[in-house]
Each structure stands twice: as C-alpha cells, then as structure tokens.
Length: 162
Image 1 (cartoon, one colour):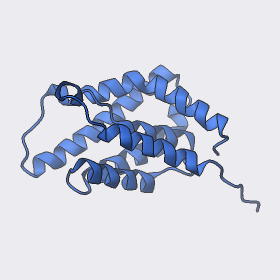
Image 2 (cartoon, one colour; image 1 turned 60 degrees about the vertical axis):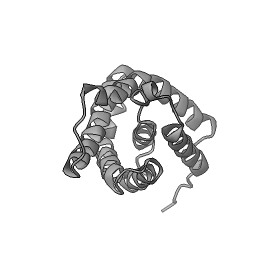
Image 3 (cartoon, one colour; image 1 turned 45 degrees about the horizontal axis):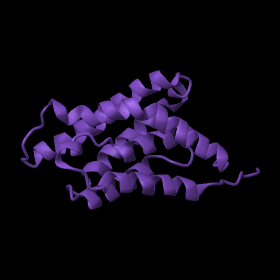
C-alpha cells in the first residue's frame, strides 16, 4: 500500500493562528458583539476540505486555545468545537456538494450550535443568560462564509495543501 504524503500542514496551522489572532484582537465595546467565530469558520472549512487531516481532535485543541486566550471556562469552547467538527465530518460529503450559499446556511446552524453549547455551559456555571444579539456573530459568519470559503480554497490550491 502506498501512503500519500500530506502537504501544507503549515498552511493549515497558519490559518488557525490567524483565526486565533482575529479572535483576540481588541475591539471597541460596540463591535465586540459583531465579532464572527473565526476559529469555528476555519475549522468548518478544513473539516469540509480535508476531513482526513482536520477533525475532532483539532477542534478540541483549537477550542482549548480559544478558552485559554479568551479566559473562558477551560473546556467550554473545546467541547463545542469538537462537536461542531464531528458534525461537519459526518456531513462533509453532502455539504461539499452544496452551492456556497447553501453551505452558508449549514455553517449558520453549526455556528449557532457552537454558541448554544457555550451558552449552556455558561448558564450551568451561573452566569446570566444572553439576549438575541448573542447570535449576531453566527449570522455574520454565515454572511462571510463565501469569502472565507473562496479565500481558504484558493490558499489551499495555491500551496497544494492535501
């Protein structure tokens, strides 16, 4: 059996580092609620594009990094992103066939799931609930999905990430 060599692991890591940096960039108070889930978007893309290389373990690890960088409860985002990665892997053969606008609707559902799981853990810890504005980042993630998809796809093709 011939094992194919994987290329572009550094590119994948770099996209996650950029997503983490965009997650912790300081924003004015009014713009904080508008910050999309950059790590979730990048994770969904790589799970769709390369399901054999990016999966639940990467989602869990990236969630731990988000927890550490944002000061949230350790494991809160790790659990949510691992579940998002799992569902993306389960659906990747179907979702890849969709046009980008239908993929954006699937991404919306996955991002809302991530936020709902994080909110559930926060509520379990006794923190106050959220308003409907809590879900604005998921809507923004849906609207920027075509840009994320085309950017990461061209990056993947340009660097021959496989």
